[in-house]
Length: 63
Image (cartoon, rainbow, N blue to C red; front, side, top):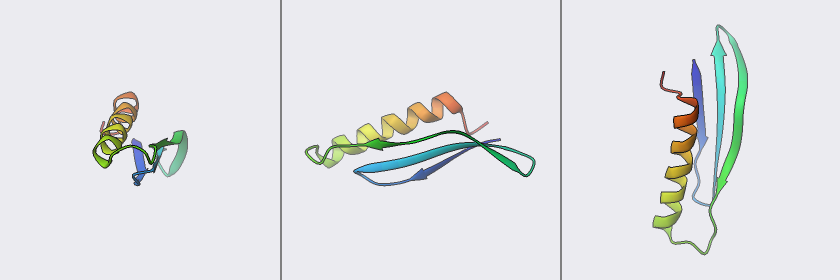
């Protein structure tokens, strides 16, 4: 099973993708999405949405 964890924020949103096999966990990818303070809130949320969707499409944690 692939698990996606998200640490929400509008300036920095962290994410981690791990694979669970039995009772063992293996890190697959992790990182953060950053938005600049000069951007409007709606644009920041749009960029965060697009970034998280890229992670979801790539690793498909819903399988």
